[in-house]
Amino acid sequence: MSWLSEERDAHVLGLLRVAFAGLLLLLTLRLGRELLQAPYFGDVFHMPLLPESFVPSRSGYSVLLGCQALGCVLALIGVWARPALAVAALCGLYGLFCDRLQYHNNRYELLLLTLLVSFTPCDRSFCWSGQRRLGTAPRWAARLVGAQLVVVYLASSLGKLADADWRSGAVLLPRFALAQPFVERYLPVGFAQLLGAPWFAHAAAVAAIGSELCLALGLWFPATRVLCLWLGVMFHGGIELTAHVELFSYTMLSGYLVFVTPELHERTLSWNARRPAGRALGSLCARLDVLARFRHEQVDGQASLLIARDRSGKPHHGLSAWRELARASPPLFPLWLPLRLLTWRERAPS
Image 1: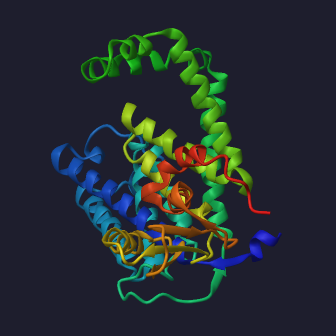
Image 2: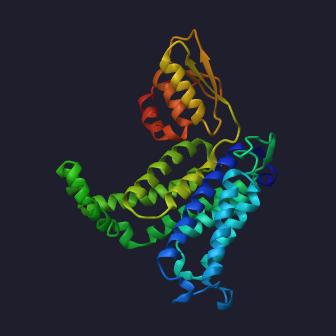
Image 3: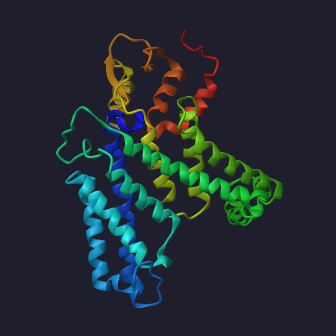
């Protein structure tokens, strides 16, 4: 039961809180807009999971959304962050229980993960005061967030695997057909023909099922984690481009933060201070390093624009240095695997 007593740095969990509070606030604003533009579901046909007497009136539902939005804002700025985030998530779950017709898997997943995040020590960083509470904190709740992500991937992949239409690609063919006009307009004709081929849809379906199975298992092992994180970013980026899933992709990508190594400043970036590009890029990377992965240095005497040192202290130059930067920097992370392939001949440190 060491996972119950494990304590690590809580800095990254603060960013996790901000991400989920922001996503839930976007969902809350959408629900508020729907309330203004359409009849309230409680006044028309609805199917509550709770007794009818527990379904609020239109004004009561407006107050519920207001409390949910207020909780999100307080969690964003770090004021009573954990209870505010929990209240926001519980308000959202209560709204789902009032009408099962409003239920969507992506909304439920966002609310459930938000509630789990509120159990983590996510109020120790990214607060409006700018002060960060030092020291380590229990990490068991973060493990639960990661486990919930795995449940989603397993349920999705095993469900598709059991569905003959999904395995054959019949489900994906209509989606590819919707994308064909766009492909025909901007890409060579061959790409549009490829999207209409049944064998390509079958291959895409097998790849999707295999990707979700890999994500469900590989995220837990250090040897495969970075590759699976990259695969997940590409997987959800593809979903976002080809399907309308509300905030689902952003929810899952935000959840990946629980798999980030909690320890801070274990890597080093040394920039050539004599070159304007070194000074500018060094300053930019320091500002974008929200995960606090690097120690940032400006060095006058080095020949290279950038030298990156990994956790073991090994220096990397050229493309290898940019690869190490991309590996630990979310905005550049999609470039990690291409750079890894370009530098595959680099010998591992003895």
